Every structure is written in structure tokens, then in C-alpha cells.
Length: 326
Image (cartoon, rainbow, N blue to C red; front, side, top):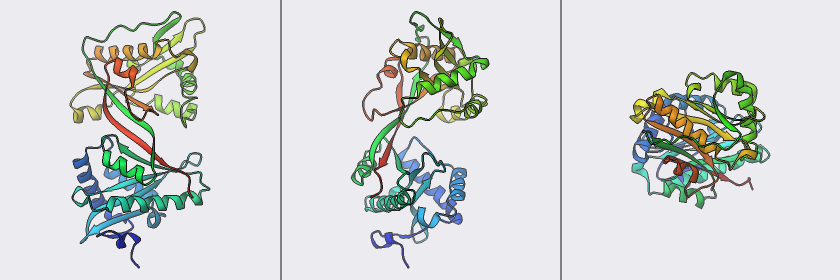
């Protein structure tokens, strides 16, 4: 018995098997070379996904071939998080096989499978698809099939020189280096800072400890904002050095991975001061650039604070979601 996609595309379709991973790796490489996406795959990641999908490959994966050559792939990755179950729609079509309607039919098939999963899960699962902001044709396709943009993740970049101004702090606030003994205070401040953020969940002490003991963490580039009257940590900027990325990108960069200000202290210039102090630390260490990741519900338009500080957008990925299963 043939696959449903056999009837509507010029390809032959079947579930992905372990032996296909090398060909899938080549397909993704060709797609990424053509599209230059912000997010890249790895063969190790594909193997991990295959292990995870071992019992659901028949329903959650499909591969399109032309004379045994893999030219299209659809892969629904189901998260293991019981509290926030997500079904990620992954895959693509080889650049040489586009403009034939294959991508639309493939995406519709993936959505149908994902909705079946949603119904089995009591509609608790969320269907998610990511797309580069610059991939306008794919974004249009997403919206045509019912995937709506909900969030935007932006990687920001700022070259460093002698032009980083000194931070200006409001009265009663001081900046301190990140001290290990204040780690729990910073975790509490982080959970408070993200308490009003979309779908954010509190970080446990164990999760926080794991993040604070990473080899890439640089406490000497990380800062806390402290209320001098109470001693309370009210803001933080925690930075790291992703050395493995420096050679590929062609420059050294300090990366601010955790950054926030407690809600009742916002609007006083603390966030600006934390970022400026981080930049000055990077520059003092001889780094060439500052980087920062921002997650926002502002799908389009400028990110005023960051642009005012000299950051520009390096990459932008938009999260799309489908509504509940019908």
C-alpha cells in the first residue's frame, strides 16, 4: 500500500529508517547551504532524534525519494516534557525540487499527523514550527496552512571598541561582579524577572546549579545589580564564552545568555547599565564583539533598548504555532 503523499507529489514516500540518516544529513546540508538558516543540524542530533522516534517513526516521519535519492523530509519531533508537550515540525525540500507544491503537501501531512497526536494527548500538546525571519516564502506557507507567528527569537551582535560608555545607575543601585555565594539570590531574581514572561517556568536549584557550573560560564564577565538598602539582587547579566563558535564566525565574542531585571525595578535604566558593564568586561578581555539572545512577542520592528546600545540583528527566528486539534 502506497503513502498518501504518493498521490499528490512526483516522489515516493515512506517512513525514515536508521539507514537513511546519512542521506538525510546530505539533504539538510544542501538545504542549509542554499537557505543559510540561523539554526543548523548535526548528524549526532539526527541520530538522537532517530532513537527518540524509534517507536513512532511510522507516524511521525516521512522521506521523499526520486529514484532512491532523498529529496524531501518531514519529521515531527515530540518533546518528552509532560507539562509542556510540544510537537516540532521539522524537515524541508531540496532546493532543486522546490516550486512543485511538494513543500505544501508535505507540511499539510505533518500537520495532520500532529493533530492526531494532539487528540491522543487530550489537546495538551502544542504544534510548533520555526522559520527564519528572512525566509518569507516559507513564512507565507506557514500562515496559509494555519501556523501563526507567536514569538521571535533574535540573536544580536555589537562590535566592541573604545566607544562603550560608562554605565549610569539610578540612586540606590550598585553593580557587583557575579559572586558564587550569591548564586541562589540570582536564581530567585531570575525567576521573579521571568514570572510575567510567556510560558516561562521557574528554574529549580538543580537546574540553576547545572547552568552555573558550565565550562563556558565566565563569572568575571557577569554582573548583578543590587539594591543597596536591602542587599537584594534586582538584576543580572550572566555571560559565557562559546569558544567553539569563534573560529567559524571569524571573531571572538562574549555572549550574555541570562539577563533580566525584576519587574518592580524596571524602567530605571538598570538593564542598560548591566549590558554596558558586560560589554566593558568583554572589551577589557580583548574580545571583538558582544552577543545577546532575546526572546520577544514583537514579531516585527526594532528592539529599541538593544538598538540604542549599538546591537544589530545577526539572526532572527520566528516561532509559529497551530491552534488546538479539531
